[in-house]
Amino acid sequence: GAVVSQHPSRVICKSGTSVKIECRSLDFQATTMFWYRQFPKQSLMLMATSNEGSKATYEQGVEKDKFLINHASLTLSTLTVTSAHPEDSSFYICSARDNPNRGSAGNTIYFGEGSWLTVV
Amino acid sequence: RKEVEQDPGPFNVPEGATVAFNCTYSNSASQSFFWYRQDCRKEPKLLMSVYSSGNEDGRFTAQLNRASQYISLLIRDSKLSDSATYLCVVIDRGSTLGRLYFGRGTQLTVWP
Image (cartoon, rainbow over all chains, first blue to last red; front, side, top):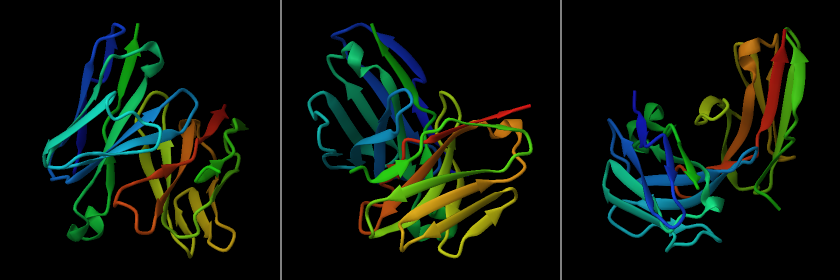
């Protein structure tokens, strides 16, 4: 079945550096992908909607310049956390929806495995 | 007000018990509803969709009450492997396909 792969699964970086997280749809094309962040014991909060070939749509309160999203192809979206700070340490997870025109089997949302970011 | 509200628990129940989780949503235009399961430090996985007529999958029963904007999940004959966080998820009508609203999750621990 369709799978979304996210990389890296864990990353530790120093304050002030940038880190890139990749989200790939492995056997389907995803014109839209979503990036979420989850703090411990909290809900997944949508950060932004990544649109292939155009600018991402950010949720209120999410800094566009800090969380750079690039969706250059139909199978890859990247989230770059720029000038990372310890408060950016969190679980970041992407999701993608299979083509809804493929019928009920395609009406499924797939999550990546998530990326644990620790900023020290 | 949050889009989706859930009692965070935790719920601690013995094996074999029946446990129920509730969830309310604020947008009456919401069109699709799901229960996801999330194990510690892992990504969420779809447990089941929730249909207006109610639906059952083995030991799991989901109910939707549109009038009250309320969703429930019932787990019968709890197993140790059911220990996880259960997330109520809603998709709004007209929103970007795949845009999910998550509840904060209800933590369940099943003990022997």
